Amino acid sequence: MESTTESSPVVKKIKKSGGGHHGGAWKVAYADFVTAMMALFIVLWVLSQSEAVQRAVAEYFKDPIGFSNKTKSLIDGKGQFSPISTHSQVEEKIKEAEREEFNKTAKKLLADLKADTDLLGFSHQIEIQMTQEGMKIELVDNANDLFFEIGTSELKAKAKKLIEKIGSEIAKLSNKIIVEGHTDARQFNNKGTGFTNFELSAERALAAKRALVEGGLPEKQIDEIHGYADTRLRDKKNPFSFINRRISITVKFKSK
Image (tube, rainbow, N blue to C red; front, side, top):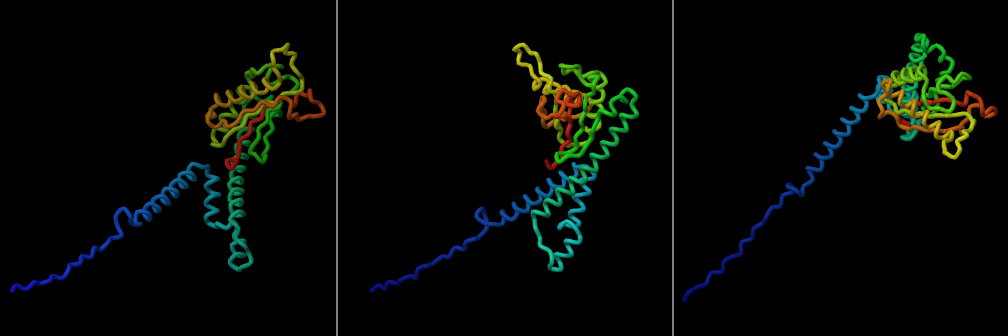
């Protein structure tokens, strides 16, 4: 009589590995790569800025909280860290550095004008001031129609040379530029053509922009061109005054 032998079942355990496409190691590597790229872009941006801006950024990283006395207060437990205020402090330091650059540019420009005998008559017609937007250079007309003939947008030869010189100087900065044209309140007898002080001021702003570019200013730096007609008078009591006729060139802060 034959006997039957029952064999025991064989159980195979498959060990699962956490690697491959479903693992998490690649995520860590990718995060490191993105962080490195961000750091590279920040360094490249800083290197493209002026020396004054680079110095301001370096000072910030030496004292990230802003000022050494605030750092001491924080360590003593008397201060309170505020990311918003720190960010505004950094922006203000960068603006401060830009103002320093603007002032150097303004002094150089005025010195060059005094040295150019052809442009001596313009020294009293240029006003340079710092505004919230940046450095504003205003070219104000006089009773002799120094920049344009009445009612036209064609720059006189010396006025064109002046604006070209301005373009040459501000081309050394990489800031964006706004060009504005302004007229007095004298209206056109346009006989239905529709040509008004708005068209005239806009065309004068464009003429100034072309002269800036011919002076060496890269066209890509031109950010805005406006023709305001007589809507922003300097002398509101005398809207027909020649001082209302002007060209404004604003070199904007980079944070704007």
